Image (cartoon, rainbow, N blue to C red; front, top):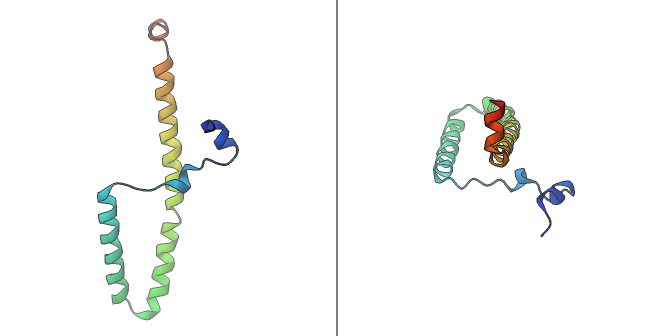
Length: 96
């Protein structure tokens, strides 16, 4: 198996496309939200259904941007943790 940085460089590693939520509460709440959405849309008059779908789609377009920022923030936190792990404790005392 190639090293992670090599895979990333070659475009073989793309965490976003492999994202899969395993949290059971997420699945339950997603299903409830979809049911609520379906019930609500059925109550709308026909002339508002398309408009509502467009509104929902515009809000859903924001989700990938939020996931991107969350990934970046999480990666930064992980990198900071690794630098802390590899920092000599004596260096911290000298520079504090």
